[in-house]
Image 1 (cartoon, rainbow, N blue to C red):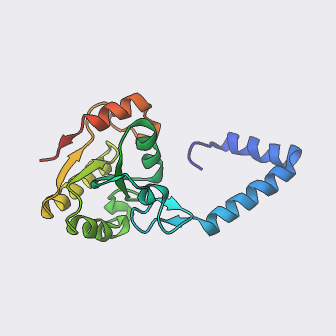
Image 2 (cartoon, rainbow, N blue to C red):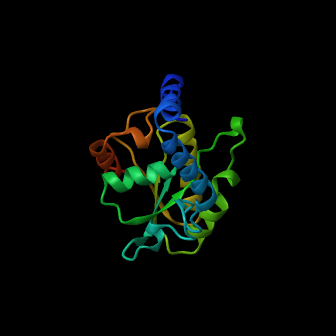
Length: 183
């Protein structure tokens, strides 16, 4: 699992097996329930127990602003660090032809439908500042331009090669509100 090395995983397993078998059963049931009961929001692809997630269901969100992110963790990072009140589209990854991840795997047809409907005025591109994130951002900017939607990208403050879920809140907030229009 990300963030859990071999030694940490071993310590967790030994703790559960030696000292907390009830906790192990509880964890096992919780994970099983999550796998069975959590799916993707029909609007933004965020993880949720319902057809529409809490963000898409909330009244008062600005439907003219749409922020494209790579993962559900990125949604949480933006929500925690900023006062953003628009909607999201979760790509569930980034373009990576070597790994067989193209536009269809990222839900681009669904995103294009949202851009085509004429309600979105700005697509905020909040992909990670990696080679793959940059390629994805360019693809998204082109897609937005095709539908006459302004595209902007979060820019300064996020370190090159960094990932949004690991950036501190102040840095992410500064980068988010310092975004610029993509040419």
